[in-house]
Amino acid sequence: HKSTISFKMGSIAKLIEGENSNMLSTTFDFFQLGMGFLNVKVVSGDESSKRHERRFKSSFGVSATICAIVWVAVGIEFEYPNNCAMEHLLWALCLLSTYDTEENLSAKFGGVDEKTFRKWSWLFIHLISGLQDYTIIWENRFIGDEENDALVSVDGTDFLIEMLKGNVKSWWSHKFKHASVRYEVGICILTGDIVWIHGPFPAGDWPDIVIFRHLLIDNLEENERVEADDGYIGEAPKYIKVPKYAHMTDSKARRKMSARVRSRQETVNNRFKKFRCLKVPFRHDVLLHGICFNAVAVLTQLPIDNGEKLFQVTYNDM
Image (tube, rainbow, N blue to C red):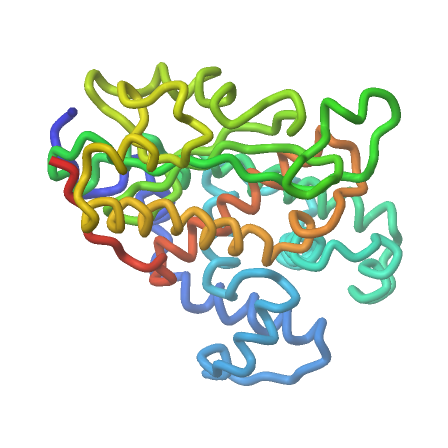
């Protein structure tokens, strides 16, 4: 393995570190603007109210703090588009979070023209997606590395799309009995950070192990393995640790430890699906699904970076 690292490579925090003095005021600006759209009057300090925070997050998917981080990061990395405003980021977040129709959402945000809503919301979804390189970072699996063989747990996760004409079999998810796209997601075992995403793939044509062979297998260090379920047994034990082999070689305690690591994948999937665009059949062009997924992955990792950690696991495979 590479040398252990104790900081996050290329992180959002390093990108925006010169703007920290403005972060509190920007957070309140987003909170006030968002709650205004919800017809709730607020004063400074209300952003720390659990009730108000829940209401804000139910509409926009993330806290006002995360909104401020994204806004500042977009301005530094891409420069703000001409004539953009903070409310346009909220439009994008609301579309991802509620996946309501553009007709309903444009009415919700003061009766703006649907074409205007569509332009700005999708532009900011693309910009959020573009922050992936600062949030989903493969090298961060080495944070706190204790020289374990496996640094990451990996699994495929499916998301519904509307039925497509033609070869439906290629898109068919046996899990959902519905047309779906599949992504590969890797989570750092020791930190719980999302460090790898890859997709989308037609769920019917791309089993988990085929996706693994497509790219991730070539990104492992010499003698590095990943934790995964038995769907990956074709690359075990050289590249993957799977339960079937563990039952033959590992103690009961170690098998339980590995099962807990793998179960955390479902926790991340549940966080993804708090954004309704990934919970219900995706009605837009399937090519846009990847942009939305990347944006949601960014919006899921940023809260992890800012205190909303996954449950921790103890892991030692030596």
